[in-house]
Length: 238
Image 1 (cartoon, rainbow, N blue to C red):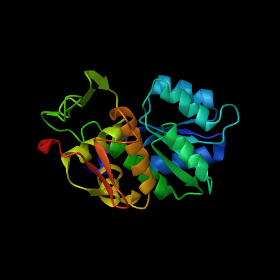
Image 2 (cartoon, rainbow, N blue to C red; image 1 turned 60 degrees about the vertical axis):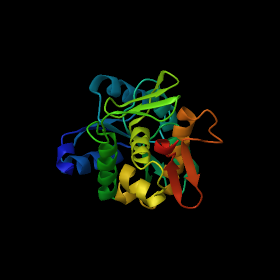
Image 3 (cartoon, rainbow, N blue to C red; image 1 turned 120 degrees about the vertical axis):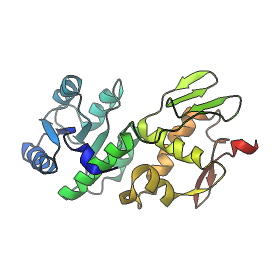
Image 4 (cartoon, rainbow, N blue to C red; image 1 turned 90 degrees about the vertical axis):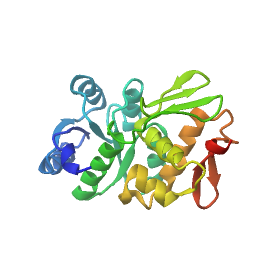
């Protein structure tokens, strides 16, 4: 799918350093994106409600409400993709952001090309036209998957998945019974540029297990192949 289709998407840049926000805006506009800026956390929340951006780029260090609190407020009722900006070497910030619902992070200092690449990758993952399938899959008496309608049902109740969770589940199920390596999963779900980020896979597999497995510590649907990757249960042979 050509990246050109993502041009003119609206990006919200949230950074209290106006010079940094302007630097990011100019580089994104150079690649054809529309960009709006916010310099305070609550200003960002209001802009998300009013303008409904396609992606939010959110700095962790904010003076009124920090980036993590802003992210929590966003996730209370909005699934807009969020890319966190973190300080170099702050590994705990990266993990915390992903656990709170961020879709990606970029470490300062960063190159303009890296940021644009991450924005496009997030847009690819959240594109509603991708990772669609046909037909209903009854994995067992508890789990029903309808990729045509983009609906997941567990014990008769619909399970809400975020776009990246959905894409991960889709690719695992499409290869049910087969082991997908970390590299294969990263390439299919996140994109080739994420090949050195295996922690994304582990984190999102954990998210899916929390939502789909009765006992996430002893999963029956998404199985670990230690040191290699994951496989979805071979429901066709159950």
